[in-house]
Length: 404
Picture 1: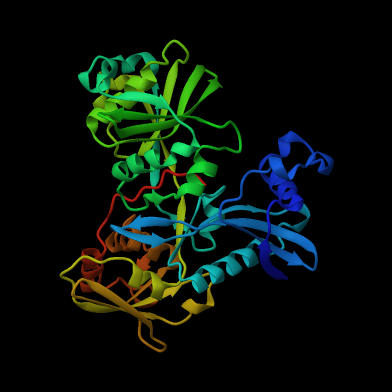
Picture 2: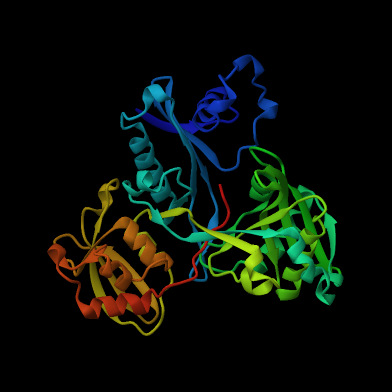
Protein backbone atom coordinates (compact mmCIF):
# COMPACT_ATOMS: atom_id res chain seq x y z
CA UNK A 1 0.00 0.00 0.00
CA UNK A 2 1.19 3.51 -0.81
CA UNK A 3 0.00 6.75 0.79
CA UNK A 4 0.24 9.67 -1.58
CA UNK A 5 -1.17 13.03 -2.53
CA UNK A 6 -4.15 13.32 -4.87
CA UNK A 7 -4.36 16.29 -7.18
CA UNK A 8 -7.95 17.61 -7.22
CA UNK A 9 -10.36 17.48 -8.84
CA UNK A 10 -10.20 13.69 -9.15
CA UNK A 11 -13.19 11.75 -10.43
CA UNK A 12 -12.37 8.75 -8.24
CA UNK A 13 -12.42 10.85 -5.07
CA UNK A 14 -15.77 12.36 -6.00
CA UNK A 15 -17.24 8.91 -6.59
CA UNK A 16 -15.95 7.45 -3.31
CA UNK A 17 -16.96 10.46 -1.21
CA UNK A 18 -20.39 10.70 -2.80
CA UNK A 19 -21.09 7.02 -2.12
CA UNK A 20 -19.91 7.36 1.49
CA UNK A 21 -21.79 10.53 2.38
CA UNK A 22 -24.58 10.86 -0.19
CA UNK A 23 -25.47 7.34 -1.35
CA UNK A 24 -29.15 8.26 -1.39
CA UNK A 25 -28.50 10.37 -4.50
CA UNK A 26 -27.92 7.24 -6.55
CA UNK A 27 -24.97 5.89 -8.54
CA UNK A 28 -22.21 8.22 -9.63
CA UNK A 29 -22.30 8.92 -13.37
CA UNK A 30 -18.79 9.70 -14.68
CA UNK A 31 -20.32 11.21 -17.82
CA UNK A 32 -21.89 13.89 -15.64
CA UNK A 33 -18.66 14.67 -13.79
CA UNK A 34 -17.51 18.21 -14.52
CA UNK A 35 -14.29 19.29 -12.79
CA UNK A 36 -15.59 22.86 -12.84
CA UNK A 37 -18.50 21.83 -10.61
CA UNK A 38 -16.34 20.08 -8.00
CA UNK A 39 -16.06 21.95 -4.67
CA UNK A 40 -12.91 24.02 -4.40
CA UNK A 41 -10.26 21.99 -2.59
CA UNK A 42 -9.01 23.53 0.64
CA UNK A 43 -5.95 21.89 2.14
CA UNK A 44 -4.70 18.63 0.67
CA UNK A 45 -6.26 15.36 -0.45
CA UNK A 46 -4.56 12.03 0.23
CA UNK A 47 -5.24 8.43 -0.67
CA UNK A 48 -4.07 4.92 0.10
CA UNK A 49 -3.32 3.05 -3.13
CA UNK A 50 -2.82 -0.59 -3.99
CA UNK A 51 -1.07 -0.05 -7.30
CA UNK A 52 -3.48 2.21 -9.17
CA UNK A 53 -6.45 1.07 -7.08
CA UNK A 54 -7.58 3.84 -4.72
CA UNK A 55 -8.67 2.09 -1.50
CA UNK A 56 -9.44 5.00 0.85
CA UNK A 57 -9.29 8.80 0.69
CA UNK A 58 -9.11 11.71 3.11
CA UNK A 59 -8.45 15.43 3.18
CA UNK A 60 -6.29 17.55 5.48
CA UNK A 61 -7.11 21.14 6.34
CA UNK A 62 -4.04 23.09 7.39
CA UNK A 63 -5.10 25.57 10.04
CA UNK A 64 -4.17 26.88 13.48
CA UNK A 65 -6.36 26.87 16.56
CA UNK A 66 -6.04 28.67 19.85
CA UNK A 67 -4.72 26.45 22.64
CA UNK A 68 -4.54 28.20 26.01
CA UNK A 69 -3.99 31.55 24.28
CA UNK A 70 -1.36 30.36 21.82
CA UNK A 71 -1.87 29.66 18.08
CA UNK A 72 -1.13 25.99 17.50
CA UNK A 73 -1.10 24.05 14.24
CA UNK A 74 -3.78 21.36 14.36
CA UNK A 75 -4.65 19.90 10.96
CA UNK A 76 -8.28 19.00 10.42
CA UNK A 77 -8.74 15.44 9.17
CA UNK A 78 -11.88 15.06 7.10
CA UNK A 79 -13.56 13.27 4.21
CA UNK A 80 -12.29 9.83 5.27
CA UNK A 81 -14.09 7.48 2.90
CA UNK A 82 -13.66 4.05 1.39
CA UNK A 83 -15.82 2.06 -1.05
CA UNK A 84 -17.67 -0.84 0.62
CA UNK A 85 -15.57 -3.51 -1.09
CA UNK A 86 -12.47 -2.15 0.68
CA UNK A 87 -13.93 -1.61 4.16
CA UNK A 88 -13.02 -3.56 7.31
CA UNK A 89 -9.69 -4.57 5.83
CA UNK A 90 -7.50 -2.23 7.86
CA UNK A 91 -7.28 0.42 5.13
CA UNK A 92 -8.61 3.27 7.26
CA UNK A 93 -6.22 2.36 10.06
CA UNK A 94 -3.28 2.55 7.64
CA UNK A 95 -4.53 5.87 6.30
CA UNK A 96 -4.69 7.27 9.83
CA UNK A 97 -1.19 6.01 10.61
CA UNK A 98 0.19 7.68 7.49
CA UNK A 99 -1.72 10.89 8.24
CA UNK A 100 -0.24 11.08 11.73
CA UNK A 101 3.23 10.46 10.32
CA UNK A 102 2.73 13.34 7.87
CA UNK A 103 1.53 15.64 10.66
CA UNK A 104 4.54 14.68 12.77
CA UNK A 105 6.94 15.38 9.91
CA UNK A 106 5.32 18.81 9.49
CA UNK A 107 5.68 19.51 13.22
CA UNK A 108 1.94 19.64 13.93
CA UNK A 109 1.31 18.91 17.65
CA UNK A 110 -2.41 18.12 17.36
CA UNK A 111 -5.01 16.71 14.98
CA UNK A 112 -8.74 17.44 14.92
CA UNK A 113 -11.74 15.82 13.25
CA UNK A 114 -15.53 15.69 13.32
CA UNK A 115 -16.46 12.02 13.75
CA UNK A 116 -19.26 10.14 12.08
CA UNK A 117 -18.90 7.87 15.13
CA UNK A 118 -17.12 8.83 18.34
CA UNK A 119 -16.30 5.20 19.30
CA UNK A 120 -14.83 4.55 15.84
CA UNK A 121 -12.19 7.26 16.12
CA UNK A 122 -11.88 6.74 19.87
CA UNK A 123 -10.34 3.33 19.22
CA UNK A 124 -7.55 5.09 17.31
CA UNK A 125 -6.74 7.62 20.03
CA UNK A 126 -8.92 10.62 19.23
CA UNK A 127 -10.97 11.98 22.14
CA UNK A 128 -13.89 14.39 22.42
CA UNK A 129 -12.73 17.99 22.83
CA UNK A 130 -16.03 19.63 23.72
CA UNK A 131 -19.78 19.55 23.59
CA UNK A 132 -21.82 22.35 22.07
CA UNK A 133 -25.40 23.55 22.23
CA UNK A 134 -28.03 23.92 19.53
CA UNK A 135 -30.75 26.42 20.44
CA UNK A 136 -34.13 26.68 18.71
CA UNK A 137 -36.05 29.82 19.60
CA UNK A 138 -39.37 31.14 18.35
CA UNK A 139 -38.58 33.95 15.91
CA UNK A 140 -41.27 36.20 17.35
CA UNK A 141 -39.81 35.94 20.85
CA UNK A 142 -36.74 37.86 19.65
CA UNK A 143 -38.78 41.05 19.31
CA UNK A 144 -37.24 42.38 22.53
CA UNK A 145 -33.90 42.75 20.69
CA UNK A 146 -35.47 44.81 17.91
CA UNK A 147 -36.88 47.22 20.49
CA UNK A 148 -33.43 48.14 21.83
CA UNK A 149 -31.27 51.13 20.94
CA UNK A 150 -28.41 48.68 20.43
CA UNK A 151 -30.15 47.15 17.43
CA UNK A 152 -30.86 50.57 15.93
CA UNK A 153 -27.16 51.44 16.13
CA UNK A 154 -26.11 48.53 13.89
CA UNK A 155 -26.82 48.43 10.16
CA UNK A 156 -26.58 45.07 8.40
CA UNK A 157 -25.44 44.62 4.82
CA UNK A 158 -25.57 41.50 2.68
CA UNK A 159 -22.02 40.47 1.78
CA UNK A 160 -20.14 38.03 -0.43
CA UNK A 161 -16.99 35.97 -0.08
CA UNK A 162 -14.95 39.02 -1.12
CA UNK A 163 -15.90 40.55 2.24
CA UNK A 164 -14.46 37.64 4.24
CA UNK A 165 -11.99 39.88 6.11
CA UNK A 166 -14.82 41.76 7.84
CA UNK A 167 -16.32 38.50 9.11
CA UNK A 168 -12.89 37.29 10.15
CA UNK A 169 -12.25 40.42 12.24
CA UNK A 170 -15.54 40.03 14.10
CA UNK A 171 -14.99 36.31 14.54
CA UNK A 172 -11.54 36.85 16.06
CA UNK A 173 -12.98 39.32 18.57
CA UNK A 174 -15.92 37.07 19.47
CA UNK A 175 -14.49 33.59 19.86
CA UNK A 176 -11.32 33.67 21.93
CA UNK A 177 -11.58 30.32 23.71
CA UNK A 178 -9.30 27.30 23.30
CA UNK A 179 -9.99 25.69 19.89
CA UNK A 180 -11.12 28.95 18.32
CA UNK A 181 -10.03 28.49 14.73
CA UNK A 182 -7.98 30.77 12.50
CA UNK A 183 -9.76 30.02 9.24
CA UNK A 184 -7.82 32.00 6.66
CA UNK A 185 -9.15 33.35 3.36
CA UNK A 186 -9.51 30.03 1.52
CA UNK A 187 -11.47 28.49 4.37
CA UNK A 188 -13.83 31.46 4.60
CA UNK A 189 -14.39 31.46 0.86
CA UNK A 190 -14.80 27.75 0.26
CA UNK A 191 -16.00 26.26 3.55
CA UNK A 192 -18.11 29.08 5.01
CA UNK A 193 -19.47 31.00 2.02
CA UNK A 194 -19.75 27.76 0.05
CA UNK A 195 -21.38 24.52 1.16
CA UNK A 196 -21.71 20.91 0.03
CA UNK A 197 -25.44 21.58 0.15
CA UNK A 198 -27.05 25.02 -0.01
CA UNK A 199 -24.74 28.03 -0.04
CA UNK A 200 -25.62 30.30 2.90
CA UNK A 201 -26.65 33.92 3.00
CA UNK A 202 -24.19 36.20 4.78
CA UNK A 203 -24.56 39.59 6.44
CA UNK A 204 -22.25 41.91 8.36
CA UNK A 205 -23.44 44.49 10.89
CA UNK A 206 -21.67 47.85 11.02
CA UNK A 207 -21.69 50.38 13.87
CA UNK A 208 -20.18 53.77 13.18
CA UNK A 209 -18.59 52.26 10.09
CA UNK A 210 -16.89 49.37 11.90
CA UNK A 211 -17.88 45.69 11.56
CA UNK A 212 -19.23 44.49 14.91
CA UNK A 213 -21.43 41.52 14.01
CA UNK A 214 -21.91 38.91 11.33
CA UNK A 215 -23.92 35.81 10.57
CA UNK A 216 -24.17 33.21 7.84
CA UNK A 217 -27.44 31.35 7.57
CA UNK A 218 -29.80 29.24 5.50
CA UNK A 219 -33.59 28.97 5.45
CA UNK A 220 -34.81 25.40 5.80
CA UNK A 221 -38.12 23.56 5.75
CA UNK A 222 -38.65 21.50 8.91
CA UNK A 223 -41.33 19.39 10.54
CA UNK A 224 -42.48 22.38 12.57
CA UNK A 225 -42.36 24.92 9.76
CA UNK A 226 -39.64 26.99 8.21
CA UNK A 227 -36.45 27.69 10.16
CA UNK A 228 -33.65 30.25 9.87
CA UNK A 229 -30.56 28.20 10.68
CA UNK A 230 -27.51 30.28 11.61
CA UNK A 231 -24.38 28.43 10.53
CA UNK A 232 -21.90 30.83 12.15
CA UNK A 233 -22.15 34.19 13.84
CA UNK A 234 -20.10 36.66 15.81
CA UNK A 235 -20.69 39.75 17.92
CA UNK A 236 -17.96 41.87 19.50
CA UNK A 237 -20.11 42.85 22.52
CA UNK A 238 -23.56 42.44 24.04
CA UNK A 239 -25.08 45.27 22.01
CA UNK A 240 -23.79 43.67 18.80
CA UNK A 241 -25.34 40.37 19.90
CA UNK A 242 -28.69 42.07 20.36
CA UNK A 243 -28.33 43.36 16.81
CA UNK A 244 -27.75 39.79 15.54
CA UNK A 245 -30.88 38.60 17.35
CA UNK A 246 -32.82 41.55 15.95
CA UNK A 247 -31.69 40.66 12.43
CA UNK A 248 -33.02 37.15 13.00
CA UNK A 249 -36.28 38.55 14.40
CA UNK A 250 -36.76 40.53 11.17
CA UNK A 251 -37.48 37.17 9.49
CA UNK A 252 -40.45 36.34 11.73
CA UNK A 253 -42.84 36.68 8.78
CA UNK A 254 -40.83 34.06 6.86
CA UNK A 255 -39.79 31.54 9.51
CA UNK A 256 -41.21 30.03 12.68
CA UNK A 257 -37.93 29.37 14.49
CA UNK A 258 -34.31 30.52 14.61
CA UNK A 259 -31.49 28.05 15.26
CA UNK A 260 -28.11 29.01 16.77
CA UNK A 261 -25.04 26.87 17.55
CA UNK A 262 -23.09 28.06 20.59
CA UNK A 263 -20.75 26.91 23.35
CA UNK A 264 -22.57 25.03 26.10
CA UNK A 265 -22.32 27.87 28.61
CA UNK A 266 -23.47 30.58 26.18
CA UNK A 267 -26.37 32.25 28.04
CA UNK A 268 -29.06 32.62 25.37
CA UNK A 269 -31.77 31.64 27.84
CA UNK A 270 -30.70 34.57 30.04
CA UNK A 271 -30.64 37.06 27.17
CA UNK A 272 -34.17 36.50 25.85
CA UNK A 273 -37.22 37.85 27.66
CA UNK A 274 -38.88 34.42 27.72
CA UNK A 275 -36.36 31.64 28.56
CA UNK A 276 -39.13 29.10 28.02
CA UNK A 277 -39.14 30.00 24.33
CA UNK A 278 -35.67 28.50 23.93
CA UNK A 279 -35.23 24.77 23.36
CA UNK A 280 -31.60 23.73 23.83
CA UNK A 281 -29.97 20.47 22.83
CA UNK A 282 -26.47 19.44 23.94
CA UNK A 283 -24.42 17.63 21.29
CA UNK A 284 -21.04 15.94 21.15
CA UNK A 285 -18.51 18.02 19.26
CA UNK A 286 -15.25 17.28 17.46
CA UNK A 287 -12.41 15.04 18.57
CA UNK A 288 -8.72 15.81 19.04
CA UNK A 289 -5.54 13.81 19.22
CA UNK A 290 -1.97 14.48 20.23
CA UNK A 291 0.31 13.64 17.30
CA UNK A 292 3.59 13.30 19.22
CA UNK A 293 3.47 13.83 22.98
CA UNK A 294 6.93 15.39 23.06
CA UNK A 295 5.97 18.03 20.50
CA UNK A 296 2.55 18.66 22.02
CA UNK A 297 3.79 19.02 25.60
CA UNK A 298 6.35 21.60 24.48
CA UNK A 299 3.89 23.47 22.23
CA UNK A 300 1.03 23.93 24.71
CA UNK A 301 1.48 26.77 27.24
CA UNK A 302 1.49 25.93 30.95
CA UNK A 303 0.50 27.96 33.97
CA UNK A 304 3.39 29.48 35.96
CA UNK A 305 4.29 28.40 39.45
CA UNK A 306 4.67 24.67 38.83
CA UNK A 307 8.13 23.17 39.24
CA UNK A 308 8.29 19.38 38.90
CA UNK A 309 9.16 16.42 36.69
CA UNK A 310 6.54 13.86 35.66
CA UNK A 311 7.11 10.67 33.68
CA UNK A 312 4.15 9.78 31.47
CA UNK A 313 3.40 6.40 29.93
CA UNK A 314 1.23 7.27 26.92
CA UNK A 315 -0.74 4.38 25.43
CA UNK A 316 -1.24 4.82 21.69
CA UNK A 317 -3.03 2.36 19.38
CA UNK A 318 -1.44 3.82 16.23
CA UNK A 319 1.88 5.59 16.76
CA UNK A 320 4.98 3.54 17.54
CA UNK A 321 6.86 6.66 18.72
CA UNK A 322 4.90 6.51 21.99
CA UNK A 323 6.32 3.13 23.00
CA UNK A 324 8.80 4.80 25.38
CA UNK A 325 7.74 6.90 28.38
CA UNK A 326 7.97 10.68 28.12
CA UNK A 327 9.56 12.87 30.80
CA UNK A 328 7.78 16.20 31.26
CA UNK A 329 9.73 18.92 33.07
CA UNK A 330 7.79 21.94 34.33
CA UNK A 331 9.42 25.10 35.63
CA UNK A 332 9.40 28.88 35.20
CA UNK A 333 6.14 28.71 33.27
CA UNK A 334 7.58 26.49 30.55
CA UNK A 335 7.45 22.82 29.67
CA UNK A 336 10.13 20.64 28.13
CA UNK A 337 9.69 17.02 27.17
CA UNK A 338 11.87 14.15 26.05
CA UNK A 339 11.62 10.43 25.52
CA UNK A 340 12.78 8.47 28.55
CA UNK A 341 13.45 4.82 27.64
CA UNK A 342 13.50 2.67 30.75
CA UNK A 343 12.14 5.39 33.06
CA UNK A 344 9.54 4.37 35.64
CA UNK A 345 6.26 6.17 34.83
CA UNK A 346 4.46 8.24 37.44
CA UNK A 347 1.18 8.08 35.55
CA UNK A 348 -0.31 6.05 32.72
CA UNK A 349 -2.91 7.42 30.31
CA UNK A 350 -4.07 7.09 26.74
CA UNK A 351 -3.11 9.54 24.04
CA UNK A 352 -6.72 10.76 23.91
CA UNK A 353 -6.73 11.48 27.65
CA UNK A 354 -3.47 13.40 27.29
CA UNK A 355 -5.12 15.44 24.55
CA UNK A 356 -7.99 16.36 26.87
CA UNK A 357 -5.55 17.47 29.59
CA UNK A 358 -3.61 19.71 27.21
CA UNK A 359 -6.74 21.28 25.74
CA UNK A 360 -8.36 21.70 29.15
CA UNK A 361 -11.38 19.57 28.30
CA UNK A 362 -10.75 17.53 31.46
CA UNK A 363 -8.21 17.92 34.22
CA UNK A 364 -5.85 15.20 35.40
CA UNK A 365 -8.02 14.78 38.50
CA UNK A 366 -11.13 14.40 36.32
CA UNK A 367 -9.38 11.66 34.35
CA UNK A 368 -8.15 9.92 37.49
CA UNK A 369 -11.68 9.86 38.86
CA UNK A 370 -12.83 7.82 35.84
CA UNK A 371 -9.63 5.72 35.76
CA UNK A 372 -8.60 7.24 32.43
CA UNK A 373 -5.40 8.28 34.19
CA UNK A 374 -3.78 5.99 36.73
CA UNK A 375 -0.53 5.43 38.52
CA UNK A 376 1.85 2.69 37.51
CA UNK A 377 0.24 -0.72 36.92
CA UNK A 378 -3.26 0.72 37.42
CA UNK A 379 -2.55 2.00 40.93
CA UNK A 380 -3.93 5.33 42.12
CA UNK A 381 -1.84 8.21 40.75
CA UNK A 382 0.33 10.11 43.24
CA UNK A 383 -1.56 13.08 44.70
CA UNK A 384 1.43 15.35 44.17
CA UNK A 385 1.55 14.50 40.48
CA UNK A 386 -2.17 15.11 40.06
CA UNK A 387 -1.87 18.46 41.82
CA UNK A 388 1.03 19.52 39.61
CA UNK A 389 -0.76 18.54 36.40
CA UNK A 390 -3.97 20.25 37.53
CA UNK A 391 -2.04 23.44 38.30
CA UNK A 392 -0.10 23.39 35.03
CA UNK A 393 -3.08 22.44 32.85
CA UNK A 394 -6.31 23.73 34.43
CA UNK A 395 -9.69 23.34 32.78
CA UNK A 396 -10.41 25.74 29.89
CA UNK A 397 -13.45 26.85 27.93
CA UNK A 398 -12.41 24.69 24.96
CA UNK A 399 -15.01 24.77 22.20
CA UNK A 400 -14.83 24.33 18.44
CA UNK A 401 -17.98 25.15 16.48
CA UNK A 402 -16.54 25.19 12.95
CA UNK A 403 -17.52 22.07 11.06
CA UNK A 404 -15.11 20.77 8.45
